[in-house]
Amino acid sequence: MKQFHDNRIIDTWMKGSLVFVSVHLIILAVMAIQQKSFTPFNVFFILDLHLYFPQLLDSALSIVFSALIVVGVFGFFYYRRVW
Image 1: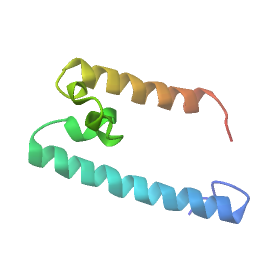
Image 2 (image 1 turned 90 degrees about the vertical axis):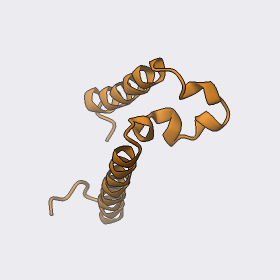
Image 3 (image 1 turned 180 degrees about the vertical axis):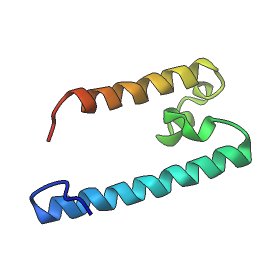
Image 4 (image 1 turned 180 degrees about the horizontal axis):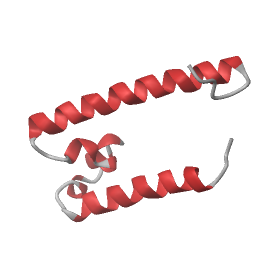
């Protein structure tokens, strides 16, 4: 497998994180299919913010804000060479 980082510990941590993120996304996809809803992919649902602000998941605008947050975070790390 390709080495992500020169430090072996950081490389192992990054590869392990990639595996767990992939498993997490598969679980979310299964939940979305079972519920026939995109709610499991909503960032507010994943962070459990709907427990504090129940109206977050009721709005269709919530999905739009969630998607913008995901694109924003991706764009931040894509265009900025953090490591």
